[in-house]
Length: 238
Length: 238
Image (cartoon, rainbow over all chains, first blue to last red):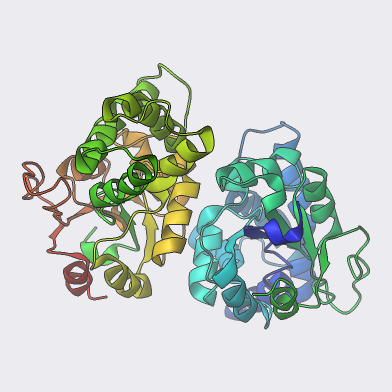
């Protein structure tokens, strides 16, 4: 099937739509000020994110039953607080609130305008490892105009498990080739392509800060490579 | 918790947001014309809908595994075609297309404007027995501005199973009392209220046509009774 048959675009969110690193740094900076603690806020963001894949792997591997990302994030947060001088400084409610920093991330500057254009021609939905509440709270705050929310919680699997992609297409009532996975991460696209989905690579060279080494260029035969979401809309005629 | 703590409104769809009876009648009328068959289109709509609860009951009772509404609707459609002179007249593709008439229902005249107001203050989502593709296709066609789609497919249970309501709240990251079930059906509200959700009754006295006998008035202690979605927005300060 050609790209012109695509009916739905599904998006990676952390890194592709929103800038998690600056957002988490901003949120922990506010907490640190309140508590009179001096810490490297970007190192805190990187440290929290470093536990993301290992935490999901405990679910993907079957070591633990299905567990949503808010819970995995909360465990990672408690694990890193001591390294940053925050051990015992936060109440459970304050820890919960900091955990919800992932619900309050800002989109990249081109994201909302590009998605608004794409929404006129396609079904647009996040296909993120974030849970539904995280994604809907983020969208409400940032004005991201999703048509619906798919993601790990709806398909009960974390990317890049193959079934997470096929189930996303099935739930939309579409063939795999009628769905395009849009991401800043070559690995996500590779896994989607292996299941027959179309692919769009949109690099986010600042996702990991100025020293980023990964995902700076496309390393597969993706259907579309776009500079940003505006360029993606241009290339898709939206 | 008072109604002022409500953060999300979840809506019944068939009958409450959209006029399924006229919509199905319109769609089958077009098919009947093409095939040169004369039939009572409203009786066809009523006959198809009459199989809705019994079909879901086969899933709720555990007699069959989880099955989405598109599949249940398709089975019911094949069962009623002979009664209306359509046996053997439709190809599988034509039958599929008529089955997707449920994806192409029109909203009641007040629905989109009311939901657009409510969306500014609340998370708004359908909590329908329709599957996700049905609900997203309907919303795209009709301009219904849902923030996300919940419903039977996401919670893996048909209303009025108690877990379908508690799971809707959990998935939104909210307490039951922070979620309001909005419906034209007293039974739906009774089941939601039993699980701690807030309730709003919006009668739709034309859902079943001029002879409607059920759900003309509230028969429970609902938190809100509203004339239509505009009145619901007024009463909720949206």
